[in-house]
Length: 117
Image (cartoon, rainbow, N blue to C red):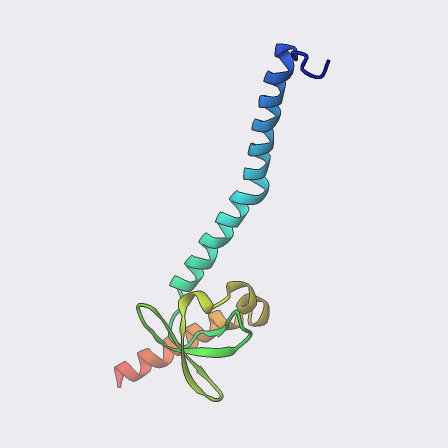
C-alpha cells in the first residue's frame, strides 16, 4: 500500500517545481549579493588619497596612502594600515554622502596648486 507507483505526471511536476525554486533563489538571493559585492569592489578600487572613509569596524579616517594590498588611514590617533576590504561603501556613504566626493576634489585642487609652485 505504501509502495504504490506514482503517476508519471507528478514526478515531472516535481522537477519543474524544483527548477522554479532554483531560479527564484538565484534572482532573490544570489544575484543581488553578487551585485553588491561588485559595487563594493568598484568603490574600494576608486578610492583616492584624501578621501574620508568609514571602515567596517566603525573607524573614521582619511586615506593617507593607497598601496597594492591596502590603505594607510590617518585618524586622530595616528596612521594605521588596513586591508582594502575593511573600507565600507555603505557606512561611508551613510556618514559622509557627497562630502567625501567634494573632499576628493578639494585635495586634487591642492595637489595641482602645489605642483604648479
